[in-house]
Length: 270
Ligand code: ATR
Image (cartoon, rainbow, N blue to C red; front, top):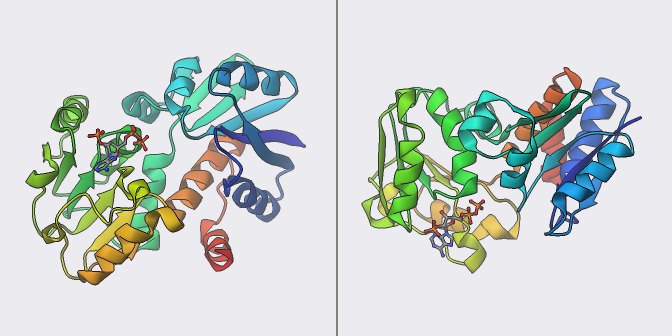
């Protein structure tokens, strides 16, 4: 069987092995998918050992997505734009880096949550690695406008500067500059780790609008509760996780798994 892993620190709670095992079973692909805990100072060494031992590729998670970007010999356009890699394929002539997070997020919003982004207003909260990883795909989906707000405004401006060539109007600001009544609000900050509900005021929410936290499990709960309390539809990052995995599976194997039953099974387990 071909070997793949999720490489990160920590990785013990990653759901990716279950997701890829389900995809493999469903599509009849012969592969093993495990976890690779990498020391903070030896991500590259661990990956090279894994590749030498027959590894064919990996997913990359916190905190190594930027390092993986630098290690890739070639990059897909979306990984280049994100300056982050969440999926590596170990080809014979070099490692290829991709980033499937943005497509995963957009697919979850459009198909699973049933909200085609074309023409909608989108608020992206955060300007760190998680936000950078998805902005290009959000723009590609063609919303009417996107506003990026961040605690430190300059990081939002940097993100804007690296994405201005793409056509959709991008506004930026600090957290207090967030516009009201957005169709889709996406929390890409680590603020919920601090237990806070939301880094922005509830006026950003629209009754019946979507409010998505890119995290899942207990880490997302405060934000989701806040959104529901104010009449928005809360959504966690589990769908995005399964969709980005589906896209990574396709990048490695050339086969697209059916994500819906895998997401449903995962949700039932949690
Ligand atoms: P990640 O890869 O998860 O995006 P990161 O690159 O460290 O991690 O980015 C963390 C994001 O969460 C940033 O947007 C950060 O805001 P700053 O750029 O101003 O640091 C945001 N963040 C973290 N803690 C926060 C808090 N308590 N309130 C608001 N935003 C917070």
